[in-house]
Image (cartoon, rainbow, N blue to C red; front, side, top):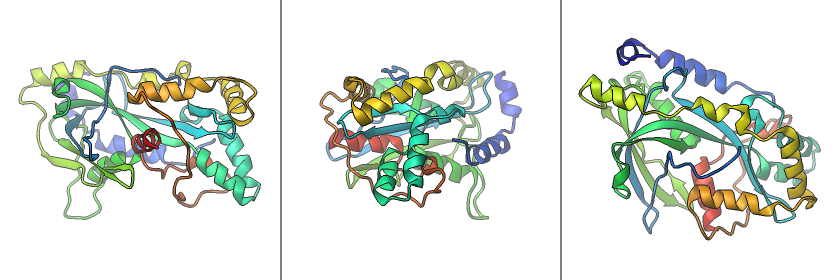
Length: 304
């Protein structure tokens, strides 16, 4: 799609339709250090600040974001299960199956285990780094940003404002969008994004030539959903059995992936019960997406 065609395309309605589709009930990867990822940084007291501009869908793709479900929990063996969920690509996932069995048992202790093991939601999007005071070398770059439901909800609030005096804003638009002011505070051990939000509407750059360069620099989001990036049902089942019963000794992989992905070298997680989630459907406890966003979740693990 050319930059001129993108200017003339009103995509806000299509984005909202896709959100409604994504939030409809569903039936119930491999990790490595990705240098394309932009990661927020915080100071010693847990404060962080950056200015990002969310970008339109890459060339040939429908949406400017992609959703990934994953599981991260420690089993009774002390081993960790940290894997993408096959429910992301609408396939049967052995962890979700197991969690449903636990929930449907009616035993409260089983339900608590299912809560700890339920899937968590992450998003990926292309962003233009407007300001990154901690790492100024990132400024002016197009990078991938991984974020959770709380930040996505803020984008949705801009697209679907609650009050009649508020006009909708498409934060992914080059011309009619707005910069996202990312403000992080540490509250009760978690990264908190309540003070984050959109700035006033503005064009990202003054000329189409500059926007064309940015548009052409985006990374594919569709590749995150390629089946080859997910372990098979049997592979996940084998790993799950190892974490639950110790039948296979592959404990190193989970912790190592988190250390590499989050840039942490002293990761010694001790999984503790999170606060009680929102009420869950008895038939599908793993379908809740009301957790703290994934970044805050992993930050808490890394600091325990």
